[in-house]
Length: 124
Image (cartoon, rainbow, N blue to C red; front, side):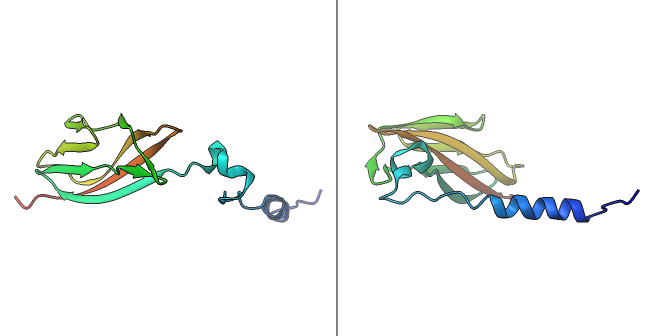
């Protein structure tokens, strides 16, 4: 009996890769623009030193529309919100990168805002 070896998996992967194209990207005039697929999440990136207090004012507008409120989805234990401002008291031994999530509520929809914070190690 003859083995197909790597020829079968390569053939299968090639067939699958060419039969599925890239996902459609919604544009302003497309049918997808008003659907859930058109919602593009926002990512904010910042950095802070360990042992300090991180303060971030979340955007007042997203997609050109006013955000009514932010609801925390994923926050650190020593983090809190006041209106659209996020505060985080960092322990002095914190370092690395952290990801937090907030739901931005508008009149017409909501979307997720991701916050990536890179924490620099403390000097002392």
